Image 1 (cartoon, rainbow, N blue to C red):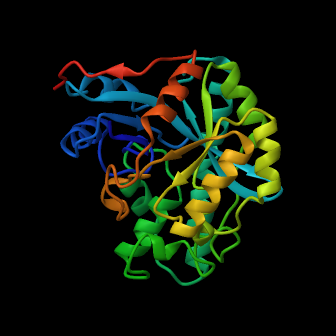
Image 2 (cartoon, rainbow, N blue to C red):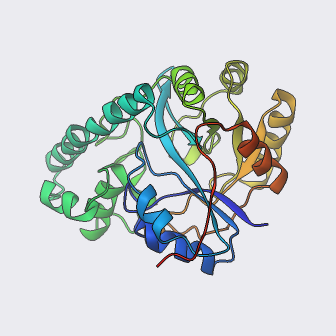
Length: 285
C-alpha cells in the first residue's frame, strides 16, 4: 500500500480542488490519501463525491499551533468535524487569517512592494487565505523566484520583515480537543528548520506525555540524517512515525506520494480513531 497522509486543496492553500486532488492521488498510484487543509474541513464533501474506486480518503486537518513562541502545525486525523469545541477553535484560527494577511500586505507595501489585497484574494480564491497566498503574490510580482523563497527573514518567515502573528492554538489544548473529537494527532514536519525556529525535543516529549500520537518523520523539509534522528525519537517516545508529501499542487515542488506512511502505522492510526472512519472510493465523478 502507498499511503500519503498530508495534502492540501483549494479549501486552504493548495492549487488542486478537492476533486482534482483525489483524482491526482489515484493517478499517482496511491492507495490512501489524507486531505489535511489548514484549519478547515470544507473540502471533505467534494473529495468524497469524486473519490475514485480503489482510493481511500482519510479526512483530517492541519491545525495552526504555537508553543513557547514557536509556530508549529498539528495534523489531526479522523476526528468528528462537527464536534463543537474543536469546530469553534478552528473557526477562531480561520477568522484571524484575514486581518493577519491584510497586515502582511500593509507591511510589504511599507517595504515598497506593490502587492494588493485584491491580488491576494484572487490568488486565495475560495481557500482560507494564508501566507502561501501572499508568497504567491510576491512570485507574481517578481520579488522572489519561488514561494519557498518568500519564507525567509527578508519577507514572510516567522519574525521576518513582513511577518504578522495570528491566533494559534496551544498544542496541548489541540491534542485535548482532537482527542475529545475522536481524532488522532501527529506533529507535522517537526524539524523543518528552513521554515524558522523548531520545537525542542524536550517539548516534543512533553507533548507525547500529553497524548500526542505521532510525528511526521519522512518529509521533504527533513534531510536524511534528520529523518533518522526523528525516527529514533519516535521510537524512544512511543510515537507513530509517519511520512507524507505535504502536497500543495503547483504551489510547491513536492509531488503526491513523494514520502509515504508504513501500512502498519496507518492501521494503528485508524484503530485509535473513533470520530470518523476512512472513506473507501466508490468511483466518483
